[in-house]
Length: 444
Image 1 (spheres, helix red, strand yellow):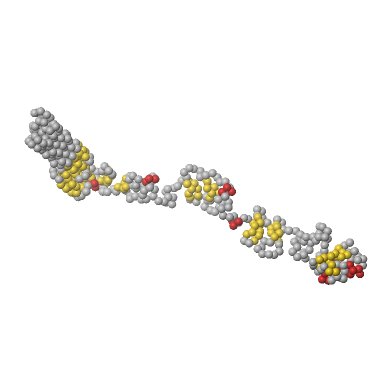
Image 2 (cartoon, one colour):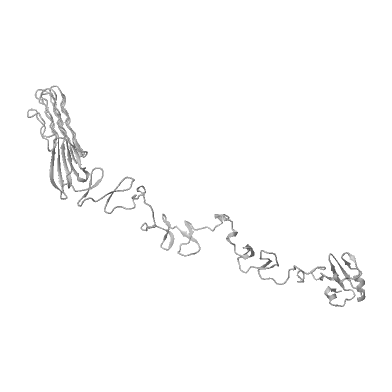
């Protein structure tokens, strides 16, 4: 028995007895068996169900929307894609290599092959289209990949491009201690900083970190330490000057006793005055004695000698006055290049034990004074002698000497001259020798 399709009937094929046809009329269908003769067809078709009712004959419209059956892999089925005239059927023809069936566009429509034309691609949606390709950055959420998922790097290295052109990043290793990452020429790498390059560093390194605390210095100046602050500078000053210490710091001044300076004046002061700095002064040489102490009188002690000084540059204290039990103490010099103390006054008991006055020990003072020769202090700064036994002589005044550079001297300086100590009250007390200040002026 052979199946006949509707086209076989409508195209005029001759039905045979025992043939079957499928009659479909939505929603019901029926398979009818033809009789042994063509004339019997009408009675067989009359039994077919048409839309749930029995008709006496198959109508033409009953043959619409029909298809053959029993052509699939199982009896009573239609093969998938067997007929392209079936709406929406997926054909079983050969497909493109390495492809899937789908729709790549972002709209409804027929399915088609979506082919993976290259290795190492995935099916993904990009720019509202479905297709094979690589992963795009938009597929990866921010902060999604952890450090643990990255490839391990070389020890003591950073990632970057060391050359002067675009390239894949690679490890830039720090191979030596204390080197830094810097650009040298056209290469990025670890190395020493070239401090000779202006772009290498910026700012001023403070003294506390081993620097100078300054960006520039005046040409030809001499630098002086200044604790943790920036360096001080000493300018050259006049031609022929030398670097000289004033006891506290360094100055540029003419050399002492030379440098073309000439002694042009000597100032001799036996009383207080004001010294004026002359024009062209290179330096001043100052010598001074303090006053000597007075000796003890019959009823009172001798007075102390006065202090001599030249401003704040140098000074000397006077000798002490003699007493009934001791000679006066010696004075002393201070702040000079040379400082000398005087001698103490003497005291001796008994009728022949008169006390002599102490010497000043300076170039302007005399030796100590014997009571039987002269009771008054000799010259400058000597102590007075005690003529009567049991009385003390005055102490000698101190001495000081100094060379002072012109740059360290103000336009005027106060001169103080110490007086000799007064005689003790009563009889036979004596006055100490007065002080003196001498200034030698050297000019160019």
